[in-house]
Length: 116
Image (cartoon, rainbow, N blue to C red; front, side, top):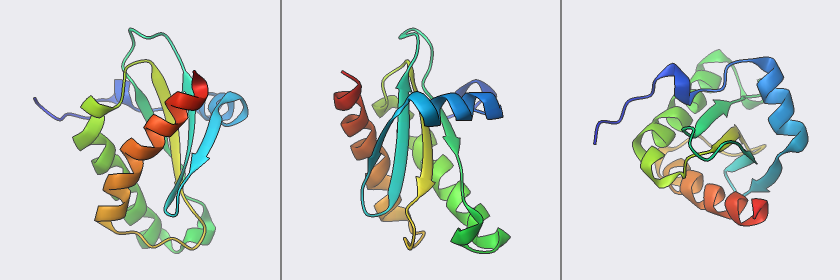
């Protein structure tokens, strides 16, 4: 399988972010907070990343974004279609690859159970 990350797999508009943050379910672990909402089951799952300024300087925020996007890109076959998710780091968490790699699929499964 080719692990591409086209624009159709990204949430880019602020109105979409607002909708998911208001209507979606929220799940968290020690590293990430994930908001999820169901869409049409035939459409591909999409991800949005928000990194608050309290996370650190621009270099640190971009590092978080790269790790989260790469984790989603390499595991997108584990996320069922028709789910929009927004991910942000938990306050005080450190950006490192193994915990983020484990958190995305775990939190997605947890959110799907809550969505029903």
